Length: 582
Image (cartoon, rainbow, N blue to C red; front, side):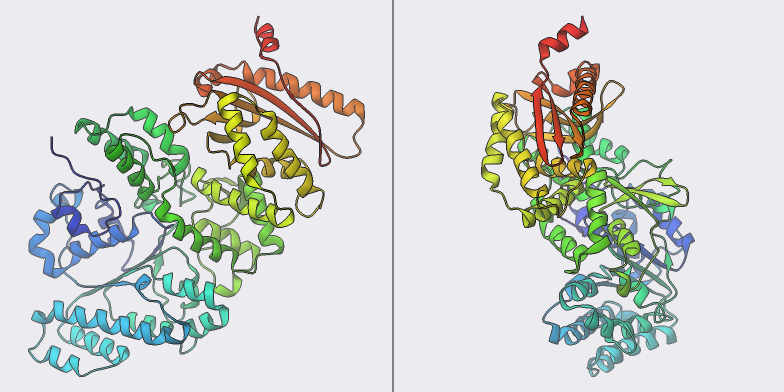
């Protein structure tokens, strides 16, 4: 049976349609976007399908593609519901991620990119202009003159122009990150060359759509480009980019019916959901719309399953690591200190923070802790999960992002007191395969002692949770889940075996952590220990545990820490638990 291959890594709409690749239809949003305004601005995290969506719009509106519309859009929603503006524009598509180079050549490179794109635009639509149009254009050398020439002729001929800008902020974010605020300010303020280009956009295009990953540049260009409607947090567009669970399930069923995906639908969803799902971009949508999957990650996972018959060895695509390295640098900006570091620690340790996402903010406010939470939201490092009064609850969306936070914590801990990870990772193997857990706990607790003794980062129970989260995240054999509900309570950590990748794992773990201040009495310690034992008994007896451990041997372990010393670490006997059940 023939089937449509997954378009993993492909962002050209024409290629997807002509090669009959699988396509998740988002064309029903075209009409809603037209109703939202003529000049729109949208932010989404990386790897969320922005480029492919813009490519679809380009072919939809392009007057040169008007005759190809029935075939290219056949079977899509918009084919049966075209808007009056279909095929009515000359479309200029700019991708600012293509601009880069040495700091001294930035303006020249940007000028060159604009020249090339405008000349290509003029050639593609030359048939709509006088015969001498291209000859006159070829004599112009500066980007500014070429832009003015093209815009003037379009107005004279009464042609409608549509500007699509992909990665509008990529160029400037790179400059801001690598070159500093002074150079960025010179580009985007007063007579800066980047600002000057945006001033020329205003008034010369009938419609404009800009997409990026940060609102910083837009705010700095406000007086030069102040006509855009920001639809980033508009609930109507919450599901426009990324995949809903319904769309992921439809994709799974398609490949199952084609006979090339031999796996249970619920099992696939259960594995992908904790890693790729969980994004919500609108406060109004948080209680109604389902959360969104990162579409590139879903394609990566399913493509591996289709091609090799199993899930990928690593749940996070290696090709995205460059993206996350850029994100990490931008978030920290080489100036991370004070409250900003505290915010990252708070999110990493608690899983959420409270704040209000700003629509936009200038680069000068990047060091403001209030704006920093907004920056984390726009980069997909937190997402909206609820409200608390006038504030929004901003939480880690999934394991993919959670791992980035834990990596940050580990780097911070290592700077205080470096440890050799090799013996720790080996102890994880012994715990997973042999049930020999004491070496694993000894390594982690010693690292906690040595790091906390410096008293630089960690004080108290909340920070103990963050420390354990970070070090347990290094364990490749488990899906480490903090605060899992088990039998009407929440255990501190549940180490659920990842049998899809490691079927040889024979042991699973519940960890209950108890923290005491240095001044606590022996009586307090005994009472706390007794309470912890009763809690872990209840957790281990829950029906949910039986399904989570998947036939492995369960080890309920209680850890009691006083100050930064582990004073008692014991496994609660399963025989005792069996007696309790009777």
